[in-house]
Image (cartoon, rainbow, N blue to C red):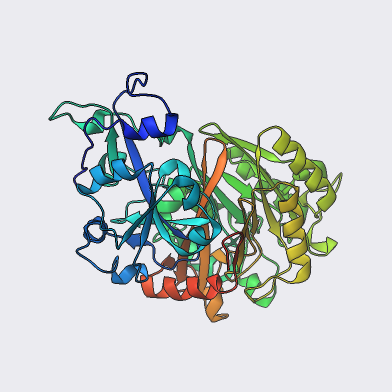
Length: 478
């Protein structure tokens, strides 16, 4: 835990930003939180506060070995007085470049340079670096222990600054939405779950449980007499109702139902599966009792942020059987979805679209996948995510949206199929005060047909490097 260095009787930040005099400005003491921001395609994830201090005062020539050899940090003129109070001294001029705020956020700077920025300037095209493994974007973040904190306004000596409000980060406006890839509790995964239904999530559970809204794409129906031995001879799948314990244990908030296997055992298991979700009070979309229900956006609100989940199966029609009278997954009607998205945006609702699409074992999507993902993005979808892929795929950050063509498996037994099927993303999307502000990429690796764990730094760096080389972050210069 780092000691928070306070700023006593500093009013200059408010005076500069408001243009009023100190006599006219009434300021109650509060805290102002800062973040370390880097180009999004940055491998490093964390920096120590002691390294930041050393770099700030010039004692260190590079930020540190784990931070890609950073030799310069940018800060704005407007925030400099507060940051001086954080670090306790003036910055070393050879390391800290100070610019007017209007000159700070150019495409070239955003593409190339690390910065220290106030929380309200966080945006999707930039990666937020954790400090001493504390994450300012996480919903369980503790502001009382955050070292990059300045106190604005007059406080008496000895004041406990943790009693002061945070003026620029209101936890009641923050939402973490976690999207995941393929869940199919069958074959090798099911064999372990017959012994312990909670086993597959035992090493990755906590970030899933911590999500404000956790999305699960469960492709397989529940049946009362599910024989997992039948799975070995073909691709007709089912799951035992007892496996529902796993989805409940990790805190599932919404279920996507447009998977290929939802109708593998006919209509009765589909109705049973819907009854199980209804009993658990977990809403679903992309599939349902009929086509009309399956096509409806699922509306969910959290901390004042309003979301709509939409999904469909874009493969040939046989994979999506929902009709006016038949239950199942719904086939994609891209034009209808575009209309729905535009209407949702008019209402101030954030559309999140997930696809069950063509499966390719490569990081780049085929043309049809790319076209459909971009079509809904251009219509106004803020997040577009591929639930179908069994391997991690590239992503595209454009116009303050995030398109991820495939995440990989969450619960499925393909660990030994290809090297890439042993890896996967879990995407944590962050929203604040009705706006999308960032995405954090969690990475997992499977060790057997059911169990995965969060990647060690070396494995994570290799995966990120491979995906970053083909991914796109728009508007960040050459």
